[in-house]
Image 1 (cartoon, protein in one colour):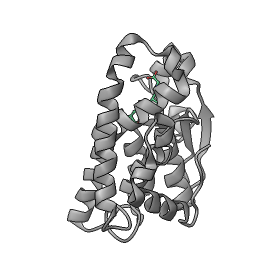
Image 2 (cartoon, helix red, strand yellow):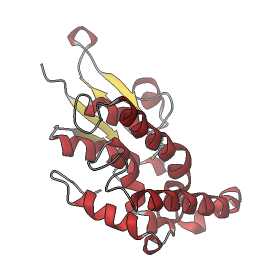
Image 3 (tube, rainbow, N blue to C red):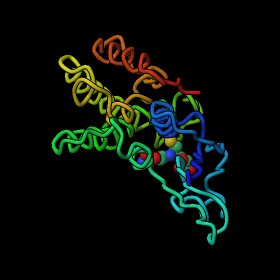
Length: 213
Ligand SMILES: N[C@@H](CCC(=O)N[C@@H](CS)C(=O)NCC(=O)O)C(=O)O
């Protein structure tokens, strides 16, 4: 039996787009259920009790219905959800080092890239600079420096690699693509990173590629 796959998402979120891109590249049907994170819709008692106690999207729901019929399982964390979907596919290299190297870039994305590049996009383009709290405003220069460092590292790596783990795309590329290709919405100038721009074009040319909403 094929299990239903439902993505609990906010369509503006790059973390959610990672999962939609993985499903699209693999030809997997994926239903969606939308929430507005700026209205606290992932912080309701019902969401916390049934979807994600951590109060965040994305969450990949696997299966649906009553527990006696298999029920629904909920998987938060974008990169874990991508891993679930890509199991046994070419998006996860089989060779041990290559697989660990792919994970290296996915951890880099969560620690060095997303907290800087994605957060500035959220603050400046979605919340709006005028609406930032004083504490957020004070953090902008450090996030700018952290984001520039992450983009520079990526650009250097892509100078000699078509994709992050070699000649073919893996989940490392899918994890890094969403917030990188809209980095200008956070005030980053992608013109400074020509190898990133070439990689973005390669990603957009992949069979099955879908753009972010
Ligand atoms: N590490 C998590 C990050 C999840 C996350 O920060 N989600 C944000 C949107 S991208 C969210 O739900 N924010 C709403 C909130 O915190 O209330 C992942 O990769 O999925």
